[in-house]
Image (cartoon, rainbow, N blue to C red; front, side, top):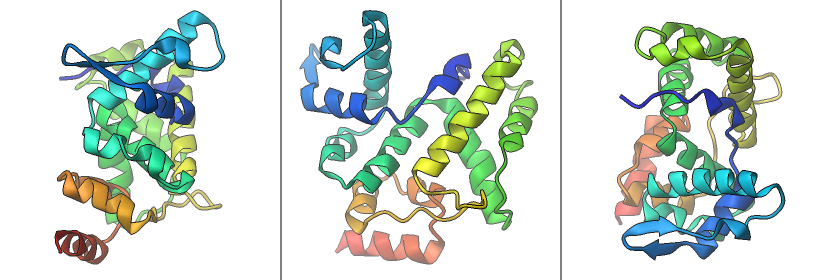
Length: 202
């Protein structure tokens, strides 16, 4: 079982880094890679860490999806970048599917940072590494999740959950790769998902 990284609170959508990686990605002996020196700003150690994170997301996601990110609108880009986070970080994927989606399904729209802290407490038996997380790591992870949900427009001004509305062409990228779970994760209802799936099949 993949471990939950205590660096979860340092994760972001990393728009600029991911786009740079996509534009300069190379297949080196069957492994995706790019020159970390192409990243802007920061010390060399920071660039290396950011490049490693960008590569992790691309390696864990279908190329047919991430290769199109540079062609998307800014709003659609953020949604696709959030998808890359879910695909490459078990902590965020589990929280989204087990808390965000389940809250929505029982019509509990309220989101608070305490939802993250409660999730961490409940997961300790399954993920004992959480016992080593500092209180600051937990709070930082909570802030990170809230920020990303705001960036993809899943939270309204009252911090209530709401469906994410991307373009039809964005959803078709996921449908064609068999990643229809992401449409549900973005809180689209069954009718909306079925219409999009049927449209993509035409």
